[in-house]
Length: 434
Image (tube, rainbow, N blue to C red; front, side, top):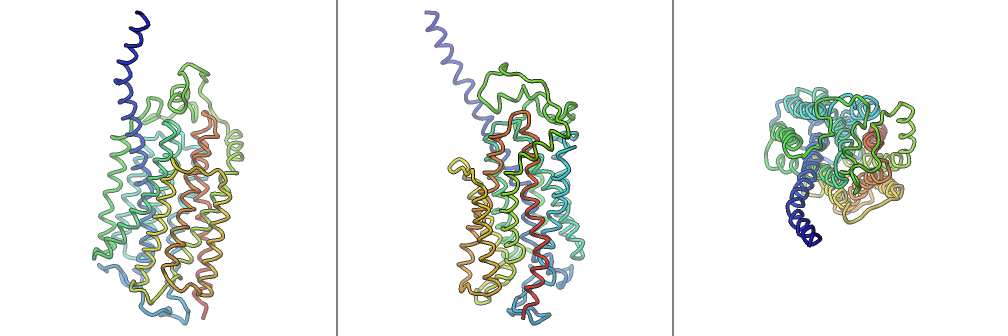
């Protein structure tokens, strides 16, 4: 009878506990999806607006309509075979990525001193500032200054939110990655749709101010944060205070099993972790180097004048298709998991070389072929990102996971920055070809 009574008690307890746990899991999964969306939104918008930002130099700061690209196939200022901006869109990319690179290279060694709540507020305010500065800028360099604020917001946010996943169930990594992919497609699509619908680039950027507000609501209202999360007070013992409290959130084990003291990682230990991360960082950096060389050096030169889309519109839809591919693959973690990231790097390099030859020799007959290649490029890039961080989360120990996730976030930024630096001289060379 006692056994039956115990079993009845178990049956009565399960319906009470499971819904609460399920709701918490879905709130956190949704919260990280929205955080990923909002964190990358300003970054994507600035790249989608890159052609318009640079074109403002010739159109004047008071332009209220999307700036059309020149109609002729040749540059209006020289005899180039291409319709080029005088300054490559890679200039916008560099302004969008260099501050992020500085943050990601240095922050893992001091960021634990800043509580997560303050980090999120910095991300929110810098994202809002980026939209406002670019909207009301009076010249290209002021616009690029606004882009820098978008970079600060995105870089600090990615490093912080990836580290934050260590406090939650590992499924939130898939939510975060899918959200960042969603930022790509929804950001590029919304900018393209609003500007082609007649809204000026300035007014379009002002509409985007809703995104930082959504980030604030998601972090402070939607997430169910564990007690071990340092929200407003820094952790005195380094990265992993109260790791014994949050360990059950990461693994199925009893709370009192294998309890460890808080770990304070030394500088040498952090360097050792980074060395172990190189097998993840290098392939992902190569993936991003190749795809952003395509995006910021070659996109603008893949112009088909016979298509009923202006040059600036073709550029925007290239970005949109690329981001659609990224979104699909970053949302695929529950279906497909890839361990050999170097294979994705190799395939992306093949894409880069093929499109470079296509630009130089102009042998692709239709823009629709380019559309397919660009979508495929996005699939490779998104798969590289989500699988890299999923592999790191699975292979890192509990006491090093938070630092490892944040430190590895430098991979994509490093590849993007290198591609931006190389894209400018290559773009200038191609634009000077007769």
